[in-house]
Length: 292
Image 1 (cartoon, one colour):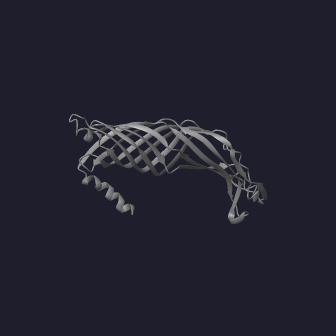
Image 2 (cartoon, helix red, strand yellow):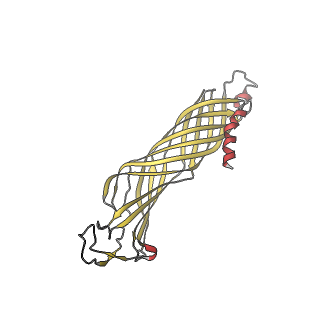
Image 3 (tube, one colour):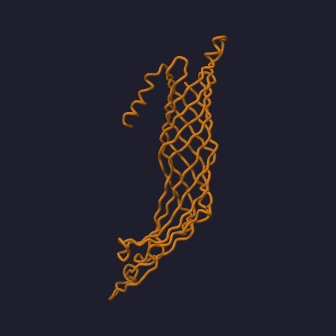
């Protein structure tokens, strides 16, 4: 269905009686973030079920926030009637904002016990030890992960790229007033509804990962999906439009990282996996658009 819908939307402006290219910029008030985090250890070893040893798993949620969003857009606006009551806007946009992933909600913390408490492996094998005459095996305990750290980072940068399609209906106030006053300038008030698809990234140049004891490492999360646009518009003359509306995302970002964990001996060393699922709330925003 999508392969037919996209060409239809792209040719729809060809049936308009008027097309106006436009560009604009705006600002959002910011919004809240929620990060659901978990971490767990594993070890590939034949002495565990299915050859995989599974350690304990800790989880927690963080309450963060996004500062003011700054965005720019460029696109085309098409009217389908001579009174400019109905139409659509197709445009691309780019956003930038500073983000803090915030602090841990202590009530959200859980600790799931390890399925496997230990595993059997070689304890005097190369490359850590010189080749022995007789190899020795021993039991190694799975290393427990700690409670999630109290804070993540507050130096994140959000950047997104989107394609938007909004349908609108205007009240032709100027056309009505011109029935009595011919000098009434171009003035319309309307509402719009639509949405689009977006690809977003969240980066931090430096954050402290307490569980693995690594400070100053970069952080990266990404995601893509759909969002909705709702709001109202005011036309002040033929070239100026003010929008006030809300953007509602329906997708999240994800980041996964793997680290060598515990003993430096590869026979005993385990693998730590950390997972971040990041979601953000709706955001109110205002923008100015210039129509050519």
